[in-house]
Length: 298
Length: 275
Image (cartoon, helix red, strand yellow):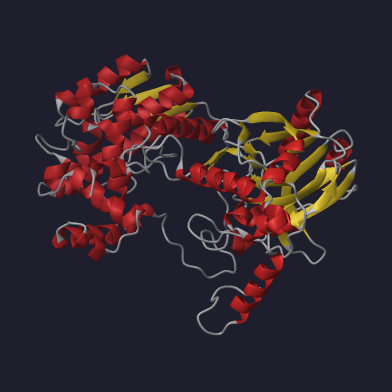
């Protein structure tokens, strides 16, 4: 029987508010929450999108960019902290040719295991990310001591293909982070934006029989509110835990990783997934000149 | 078309809007707010939200009657002041505005109303400096979209918690926050002359126009789709024109671009920059 190195994972989500463009104070909050999480025996702590910088950065972007190395004044503290527990943090990544990305880094044992650059930059409605950031061009799962993991950032999982690709690439734990502005107040008990995100996260957990954790931020930037309500869904699509809406919280849960095996034993969606069929049809659709796909081909 | 379209969860609105006031005032180093309290429902709601967000002792409600203002307005404002326990002042604007108004015996009601609205803005910003509190706005989404307000007058504020609520939603939230019934139930009025009401002056009811605005703005209906949905074509045309015509009231002054980097075009920062 194949087992994960540990059948339990103490996972926590740091649902924080940030100071816009003030990396030092945000770093301080990260280190404080890491300390609290460590005291609760957390093994993996996930921060929201752009947790070190704030969200509506606009022209602030170039002044708050960092790269996760041991000599970086911000990351040296986080890498040191990752010797005690694994971390996912949100930041602006600047590459060697000075392109700026919305990024998440997975830190473990003082090392960077993976950096994900956001591949979908919403540039419509209230969003203007494509104006200020470069588009990521890779979606890859990676191995951790808890099993194979995938990172996505907000709009990445408003599209179905990134979670699907991570699933095929072996991810059994999907770690999503967001800075999701609250919108769509009507007579429902929750905001429309909250309902939408919860619905798709539950769906991914169900369709892919994986764990899906979503760390969303709270607080305000000018008139925007960020709604929080961070969630963890299990491979059956059931809600494991949820943080409160609109307020800061550190929510933790001990995940029973054995659920992956038990769920897939009765529901072999992963076993039966016909990737070759999907690949062939995708190829046909993209290359079809008539009646086929009319969107981006990159 | 049903009336439920505009119904809001008032508990959630209350939580988001009080959080907004608290965050956006305290993050820039303030703890207090100033609200011009007219006796009407919009300013009552802003005042209640500010008191809940910051504590009643940190809110200054300012009544600013003109000699022609109705006594009911003052009484209704006082009802709310007493209920909330906020700090209050009454500063009559008659002596400020009459010298200007008296210069022109033929002055229109619109000009007089604008002068009064701008005099009240001067008073509020003076109290803001003295009280060390930010001015909380009282314009709702309906009047902002219709341009039914005075530029640099009643539109002026540091932050506006109710600017994304239609008038009918303001009423709903006001009921949810226990604002005294006489304030909620009376006909909305700018109270610039005896017997004036918004709905007489506008020529339609808030109920009607809010449903139309909701379709046009929130639901992105085309004007012809609004007509198909049952609205009179001339009413739709009138509102579409008003929305476009008054866009200027919803903007900072436009700046002529000549440099490579110009405020508003490619010098882009939120007000919360660095906080």
